Amino acid sequence: MEEYLKVIEQINEKFDLFKLLVSHEIKEADQLESFGLTPQQEMMMLYIIRNAPVTSNDIASYLNISKSAVSQVIPKLEEKKMIERQVNPSNRREIYIYIGSRGRDYLELLNKIDELLVKKYYSKVTIEELRLVLSILSRIVERE
Image (tube, rainbow, N blue to C red; front, side, top):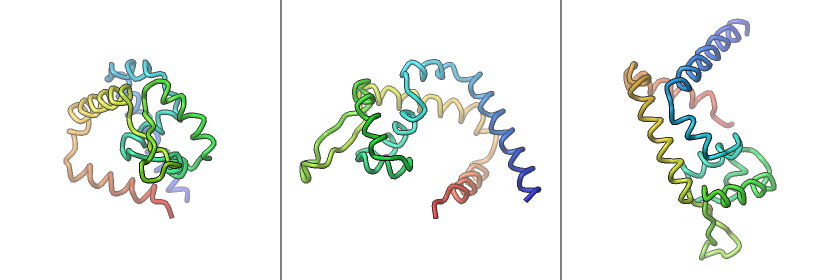
């Protein structure tokens, strides 16, 4: 257990250092703040971007929060034009959530940031090494 804790501490330090490097590199990070999203709204947006169309139940299940918590955030995201809601034509009681016009701007900025990170940092390692990191992280976060 002690050995795990030491390695985890080192991993956390490297993650912190990486976040610090990235925050200094990315001018676009200031632009991210212009969207005015809370951390919870950011997590929801990332899920919606990767999985749209989704339902409130999908979001609640993925983030492991109540549907009520999702229902409080969704109108705020819609007001900011980050998302759009549409009734499911085959089940009128179900609402699908899609990326809105401002959400597409947000996605475009995230893609620019990813490209910068690839050029500046991720390209320092091979694609095989990145796949190994992905595999390891996937095993760590795997839900039982």
